Length: 129
Image: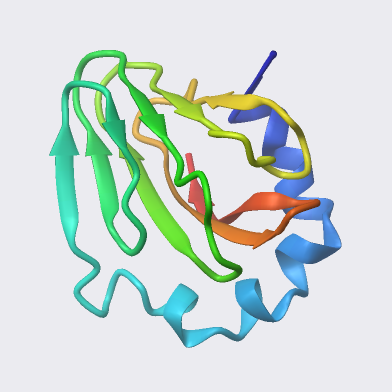
């Protein structure tokens, strides 16, 4: 199954780990990531996410695979340019506590995913869509 960015909006707002976790609220590496020269890469074909990189997807549909063995606190970023619906392959780990891949169904959406633990998996930080 697939979840979409729209499906996760209430989870990002209401889930306690999204709002009160030290990763999401106080960790300087999360809040200051973009301003601290967060490197970017642009992709128009399938790719593997690299930690600490902001991945820009341009005008066609592509699949980005998350790291299969992330450590707590690892983060990746994504910016969806244009009208594509990129897929984020969970690569064996949960996304927002769900064992499902994520379809980014919102144009120009940008967000970071932070790996929290095996139960919650990758959680949204700073979503903008």
